[in-house]
Structures are given as C-alpha cells and as structure tokens.
Amino acid sequence: MTSDETLLLARIAALLERLVPARAPVPDFAAADAFVWHPRDGALQPVPKVNRVDVGLLRGIDRVRDELTANTERFARGLPANNALLWGARGMGKSSLVKAVHAAINAGAGPEDRLKLIEIHREDIDSLPALMGLIRTTTHRCIIFCDDLSFDHDDTSYKSLKAVLEGGIEGRPDNVIFYATSNRRHLLPRDMMDNEASTAINPGEALEEKVSLSDRFGLWRGFHRCSQEDYLAMVAGYAEAFGLKLADAARDAEAIEWAATRGSRSGRTAWQYVQDLAGRLGQKMG
Image 1 (cartoon, rainbow, N blue to C red):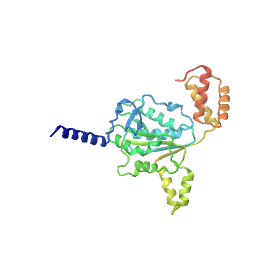
Image 2 (spheres, rainbow, N blue to C red):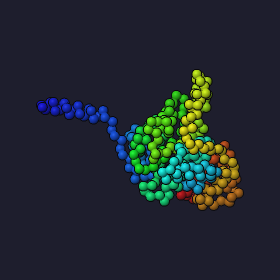
Image 3 (tube, one colour):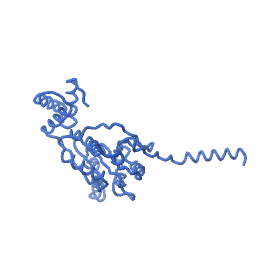
C-alpha cells in the first residue's frame, strides 16, 4: 500500500469517526445528590448545594407534604410509588416541597441508598428518553424533577412525556420516578384544549387526549391560595427558625401590609417579607 493510499484511508477513518455520535459520559453519581440534565452534551451536571428550605418550615401544606414524603419513602425503599404532579397557585411551595422532601429522605441514608434528584428543564422534555436511557442501568434511585411544567400551542413534546411516564415500549425504569410542578391543572392551556375539542371529528376524544396527560401522574395534588392565618403562620415559622426578634403583633401587621402591597398571600410572599425583616434587623439568615 502506497503512502497516498494510507493517507486516504486515514482521512476516511477520521470522517467516519465524526459521523458516529459521541457516547454520553457515564454519570458520576458519587459527585452529588442533585444534578441538572444538559441534553446537548448528554451529561448530568452535579449541583453541590441545592437551593432549598427545611421541610419543617413549609406550612399550610401538611397533607400534601405527608403524602409526597410517604410516596418518596416507598420509592427509596424499592417499593411501588407514583409519579407526582403538584399543581396550583404560584408561590405556595410546590418546588420547595419536592426539594425539601428529597433532602429529608436522604438525611441519615448511606452513600448507596441516597436518592438522586435530577432536574430537567421544561424546554428539554423531548430529551427524556435519552435521559432515561442514561440512568436506566445505574443502581441509584433517581427522581427526575421538572419545575413549572406546561405546554403551549403547537407543542407536541407532551406526547413524549406521556410515552415515557407509562405508555412507551420500554416504560419507566424501576429506579426512576417523575415529579413535576405546574401552575396549570392539566398542563395545557384551557383555550388549547377547547379549540382542539371544537375542531375535532370527535370532540370528546380530543379533550380526553389532553386531559389524559395529567392522568399519567398517580399522585396529583392541588395547591391553593392560603388564608391569612396560614400566611401569618408561615411568617412566624420563618421568623422563629432564624431568630428574628420582633413583637408578634408588629410583625403580623407588617406582614399583612407586605402581602397587601403585592396582592398575594403565599409562602413565597412570607419568605420575601422575612428576608426584608432580617435585613432591617441587621441579621443574617442561615
């Protein structure tokens, strides 16, 4: 073989290597308990410190907290558990609850028994099959978490989510569970559902197709706007936890005014007020 032929073969081999998709890197689950999925690189980025609050600080959502904790405990023990959709009012602690429950379950668990929390962004939902394939063979049990999940007009990626949750050929791996939060009860705009129902040959079937997405979540719980009593209990809980000293009557009056100026009573509003209070008192939180 001449040198020119050898050079030509080397070039052909290099071109063929470029055509072969790069194999996704094997996740290093020992690096952290939480990760963010980056589908473009096919990689899981470790998150050394998760932004979350202690589960004991979440007030006014006791029943949902207990149900999600029990469901997650069963999953951690290798028992049957449900995918969960937490929907409803903004700022009521939906995503905070998922992260807090994850931390609570892992407290005291050994390295091999710790749950892994993997966040997938809404715009990357169509890459769920690739993510499932990446973690299907690991011995770790993983919660795939999507915050603020919803679908807009002309968005067909919800069909991929339905298939992954239950209906696909491979199905959901035994070591994976899917938790999502949304401001929408059925994840799709109401007008989208109404328009498709009105133009379909069989309106009932079109509507059922949309609603059935939320049916894929066995644990489906709503978060509603809190009462003033619950709101003040949230403020008091945060203030006590962080040692913020202010007379109860004065603190409650300020907190009520704070909520009124924002037109909302919620856990997020309570947290924002307490942060402002801590700043005015010259105290650090945490």
